[in-house]
Amino acid sequence: MKRQSVVLGLLLIVSLTLNAQTEKLFNETAAQKEARMAWWKEARFGMFIHWGLYAMPARHEWVRNNERISNEDYQIYFDNFDPDKFNPKQWAKDAKAAGMKYAVLTAKHHEGFCLWDSKYTDYKSTNTLARRDLVKEFLDAFRAEGIRVGLYYSLIDWHHPDFTIDVFHPLRPPDNSPKEVWNELNKGRDMSKYRTYLFNQITELLTKYGKIDILWLDFSYPGNLGKGKDDWNSVALLKQIRKLQPGIIVDNRLDLGKYADAEDFETPEQVSPSELLKYRGKTWETCQTFSGSWGYHRDENSWKNNRQLLDLLITSTANGGNLILNVGPTARGEFDYRAKIALDSLSKWAQENSKSIYGCTYAPEKYAVPAGTKLTYNPTTQKLYVHLFDYPKDGKLLLPGYGGKIKYAQLLHDNSELLTPDKKRIVQFADSQDIVLVLPEKKPDYTIPVIELILK
Ligand code: GLC
Image (cartoon, rainbow, N blue to C red; front, top):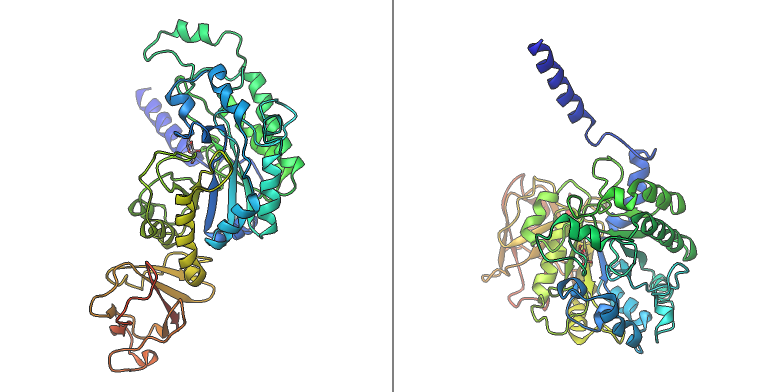
């Protein structure tokens, strides 16, 4: 008897393990998925735009949570929102110059304010001094520049009267409050009504504005006093999304991890370049800020420099993933001077060096990584890119064991030939021989210069 139940228990564990992630919601084949994701994997680099009323307090987009601000006290921002300099055509030009191939705008963030003319709420941009459908103008402007477009939509909503008060809500009671206090606070709030609102708004965004390339839903925190797939009705929502926009790419924050086909990409947030190695082989996009905050933060001064930003971009590609870099426009609707400087510095590099990014991934293992560099590889054009993080002081770069594998070497930014010290032709090196390249004595004027190796 006892033995039988042990066996049964084991069987159950085995079947549960086998079932994990085998359950599916859709009929898409692997090849179809590959085709749907192809442009996104090729693109590698996008712009995130976090914009909302929180640009006015200018002290983080979580300001309502951090300072426990009520709807009434937050109303002052709605009443005074006046983005007189809003010009998404300029945003799109800046994104394009920086080498970004797609852009994702917060149609609604956790504060609940809608940047489009939604028929399901009055809490929207068209009812402010802006009087404009900001989502529509964003989509038009970016599409016109040939940039793919996406919308971020917050599953969380701190303004909606039916969204129940939970662990992140601005109106949450003090820590360790008993259950009765929470129940009392949530009297009259009805999540099923919020679920309908959410469903309707997503439907509206995916039907009124043409083709949307990406939907970035944010976020789930299941568990006690949290919210997850049942609160959002995630399965029905995702089915609706795919029905309305079959080509769309959706992130992984709907709490549907148990399904093998519900999440198009992972979203490691604000991780360091060294942590990206572990995502090799997966489909992912790391989201990153210029400074610490997503929304415009006037007094946040820890801005990443050009080298740090390029490191994120190159290291993402070098591990087979995407980077989406965030700008938080000011309450007047502009990229502030620090964002401009950061974008300009990226654009200088991107103009001449981005061949090492688009369509690239990590290099095959047979190429040892030369000291002080990071490698990317384009499987279609058969080129290998060596990013010179530490420019060699003696002007010489050792390519260990590269003999027999490459036929030509040049600097990427100007296609100027790179020779060996004795001007030997690289193509003549025997298998696995070390090759030394002579670099210009004066470092080219890029934070991280790139060498292009044309493979045999
Ligand atoms: C987070 C934050 C948020 C930001 C987002 C971007 O989950 O709540 O403010 O929008 O991640 O990835």
